[in-house]
Structure formats: structure tokens, C-alpha cells
Length: 166
Ligand SMILES: CC(C)(COP(=O)(O)OP(=O)(O)OC[C@H]1O[C@@H](n2cnc3c(N)ncnc32)[C@H](O)[C@@H]1OP(=O)(O)O)[C@@H](O)C(=O)NCCC(=O)NCCS
Image 1 (cartoon, rainbow, N blue to C red):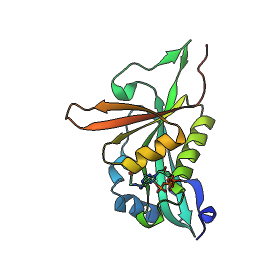
Image 2: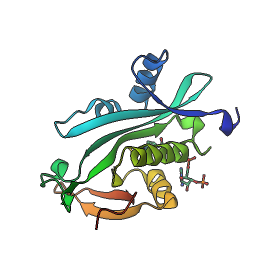
Image 3: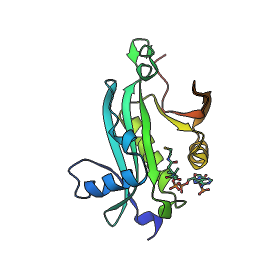
């Protein structure tokens, strides 16, 4: 199947292939990140890549105030509370990788986040996903490496979407 035949679109639980998506999420070991809910989540969205109605990749992001998930106060500029899209889960079936699907999922998330009024898109990746790091850097994400208290390294990736009010 040609890459352009892969559909990229948001899915909701009433989608006829929703159960197939749950299986894909489980196969990719991302169930915990798809089911994770927190008080500070304002909105949650799943964008799916599908071929002949079969899901082959997905991305989940949530919209949230900037700050509370890091135990910080909400960030506001000139009285404008800033929200971000945080990508919590992302994956493509192993036999469908390196065909541009992951890139298209990320771009769809960036476009949706911009339409939702987000200030930035952010994600965290641990040190075991070099292909994800390459993809984020190729798309122009800024990188903020961190050392976790457990001694594990990771990287926050941030993509700015718009200037805040002056
Ligand atoms: C990360 C992932 C989603 C990328 O999906 P993908 O559909 O293969 O990505 P794309 O084909 O759109 O790749 C886009 C770019 O990312 C980079 N990239 C992707 N896979 C790469 C790899 N294995 N090695 C080096 N660079 C890679 C390249 O710059 C690539 O562009 P190019 O093919 O023109 O060189 C996929 O590898 C995956 O599911 N990995 C396991 C799960 C994971 O790591 N999830 C994210 C952290 S939870």
C-alpha cells in the first residue's frame, strides 16, 4: 500500500475499528499511557493512522495548563493562562515504520494543537527511543535533556506554536 493511502484522522470510541486500535496499543506496550488520566487534563485526543480501516499507528495527546503536571503553578502571561498539548503515547506497527507515518501523526498533532489554541506541544522520551528523538529533531522540536532522580536520562521535546500576548 502506498504511503499516501494511509489515513490520518482523530478517532473516538464509537469508531467501528476501536477494538483493533486497543489491540494495537496493547501490542505496542502503550496501554498505560493511553489510559492515564489526571485532574489537570482538559481534553484528550487520539489520532490514528489506518490502512483499509486497520489501525497501523496512533498518537495520544492531552491538553493541559502549563505547569501543574510538574507540580508548578499554571503559567499565565498578561492574565492569559497558557495551555499545551502533551503527547503521552505514540507508536507505529513495526512493519509499517520508515514510511513517514510517524511524521504525519506528529504533524497532525501539531495542527490539532494549534487549532485548539495551545501555546506549545511537549513530550517526554526516555533514552531508549533514538528513532523518536531523530523524528522530533527532524521536525524542529527543541530539546531539553534531563536526568531523573532514579538516574535515568530522558529528553523533553517542545514545539512552540505561537507567541503569547505581549
Ligand atoms: C518512533 C516511531 C513512532 C516512528 O514512526 P515511523 O513511522 O517509523 O517514523 P517516520 O517514518 O515518519 O520517520 C520520520 C523520521 O524519523 C527519523 N527516524 C524514524 N525511525 C528512525 C530510525 N529507526 N532510525 C533513525 N531515524 C529514524 C528519521 O529522521 C525519519 O525520516 P527519514 O525516514 O526521512 O529518514 C516508531 O519508530 C515507533 O513506533 N517506535 C517505537 C515506539 C516509540 O518509540 N514511541 C515513542 C516513544 S513512547
